[in-house]
Image 1 (cartoon, rainbow, N blue to C red):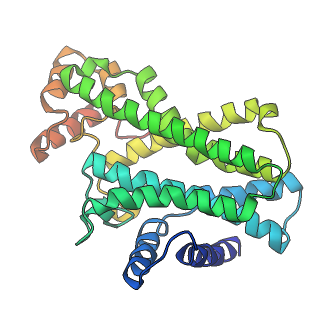
Image 2 (cartoon, rainbow, N blue to C red):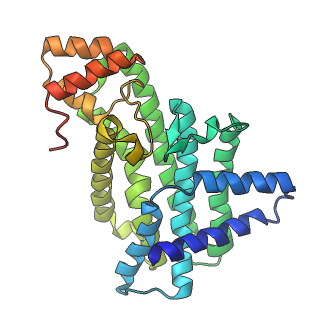
Length: 302
């Protein structure tokens, strides 16, 4: 029921954006944005967006929200889904990925290419448009803007850490350790995936985020564990099930699995890792996966 109501609000928000008076849409540009939004914002599980609605209900102590409450909570939820789409469109370009959510990455779609960079910028700007339209007169409007800006900064900084750490790892794989991994995933994933939805619900409820630092710490821990699971699925998840082909080994990523392997491996096993990690050759990838199995990593997260 929540999901159906949430989905209907997406249609309303998209329609508002497509008639935004700040830009004179042509028929072709309107069709492009319409298609781009459906391709990139939809298709996920909407866990982040629905978390705003669920958290708001818990904070209010009710099972059913009023129509206005549901609209406002869902709008903030969709803002997070838009933010996720913005990150993923650009992340896929940076990682030279092939699939996302069971379909080709947006930049790999015919006639899109690097237009996807501008689409990513538009996705981020849509968030500001939606917040302005529906929350400008709310007393917490400035706090909402600050929250989204702060979380976007943390996430972009985490992405930077991920990218430059990969360069360092290419020169010396021993630079990868659990502390480095934790710092990357905390900023790249945990804040926008776990903290942001609950923080939005708190602001909707009239609360001050300064009073909830413990909540932030707990949610960041949850987000860190989530990314560890994601790292595992990148290697062992069925692409049909997880919606993407994992490339962490080929891309020299500082993933949880390689960090654990470096901690557990003896010198001969490390030499196998050094020789094969970060290579596009399927035979090299297979050797890394065989080593993970040898080190009892295939069994899952303890």
